[in-house]
Image 1 (cartoon, one colour):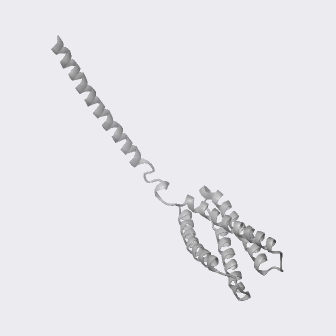
Image 2 (cartoon, helix red, strand yellow; image 1 turned 135 degrees about the vertical axis):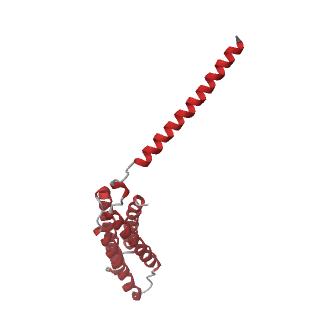
Length: 170
């Protein structure tokens, strides 16, 4: 009798293993079939041309932005002769961020268009504050420092908005 139970137990165990293997194969095949069929021939296979264009524009923007930022931060204003270069770089940065504002974001990224507007507005505010610091009438030193800090804060906020936009496209 014991031997009979052992054979039944062994058969049941073998049957359980076979059933488990069979179900695992069925689940794997269904999963693979479902994954490979997802979006087959559908719109998802083709990239959105507007998104592709935006990615290219953002890549170009980033290259220019990095270059201009390095040039701007590398400027030293030690004399009146350095002021025209500073003014030119501020204008270039404002133009660049204005171009960012004008980029067309697809509907799926509409909120990023608002973020681009914010970045351009912060850069405009920063440029105005820098111009007031460097080209304004003589002011008290404490006010100049506070205004410079305000300009740098807005400058950094503009770049943070750009990083937020790029996060969604990385």
